[in-house]
Length: 117
Image (cartoon, rainbow, N blue to C red; front, side):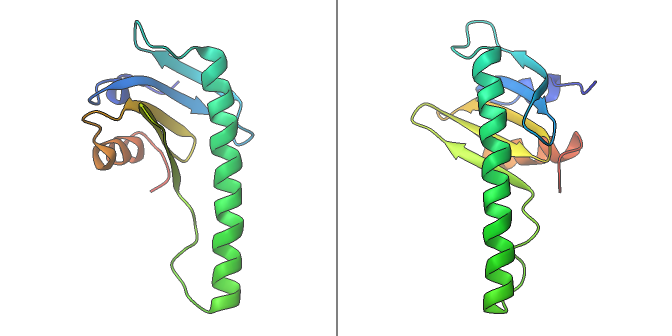
């Protein structure tokens, strides 16, 4: 099991989660009073995996057709919402409130815990 406490210590963290390559929620932690729940995190994890797959396809296609390099591999995905953002790297994710969010710090913590680097 992954120790999600480092992610939950990030400013404004609402939730931290681990998903498998199919987007199935494997482990999670929710902040008390968070508007999120396990069902929402499961859907979010599936959406993150789907968007990583699409971004990977686009990056590989762009490199193959343009001759440009450096777009692949895709290591993470960020969904920026109105009030909160979901940040992923590999199979790890964290949801943070946008007010005072530290995106670079979140990516660093995700990579430190074993996310894609």
